[in-house]
Length: 239
Image (cartoon, rainbow, N blue to C red):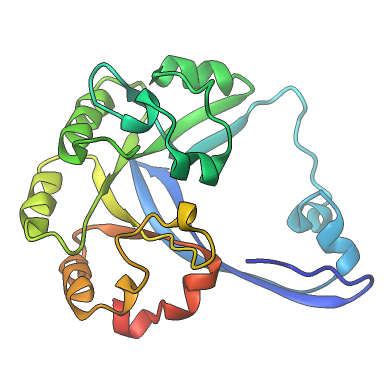
């Protein structure tokens, strides 16, 4: 969401977020609605969280903040093929900028070194656009079984694929898979920011039927899109 700042204006902040938390040695993905109520613009612009200001709390500077990282990528270019790491991918570069220094291998020790100022209680691993998403998820499952912290897995799904149900069954065989996602970003004004097969997938009845296979408790779902596409996401008709 975009917040337009107006000096000394009163705004209401309401967010719906997906987050992860550790419970009994595993990672649980939940969705929550967070309502902050009406606040003055001075509160919005202040860098310190509203809740902290209201309580007057201060975090001990010597203590590491405990984190369950809800979105990260661990990958190994020798174990799985990532075409965007083998050559410059113009679409990926349009999304994140110059990534020429991105390593071909980034594993948990590398991540811990980068996050040395925090205590990592758990992670949510996301697929990284490999050439073989099933192979990548099964590799991630083996990785999860070796880590010192719980790791949930989010795999790639193609809701138009004829083999979708078989793919979901394979994912279900991996104990740590909790969610799937599809890249649906589509920018009408920029061909380099079109990551979906088409720009009308959210309105496609066949695509919606594929999505409906997730009903119940099978998996959570992440639909990756641009804010301009959100009006097409009708909760009742999609899920």
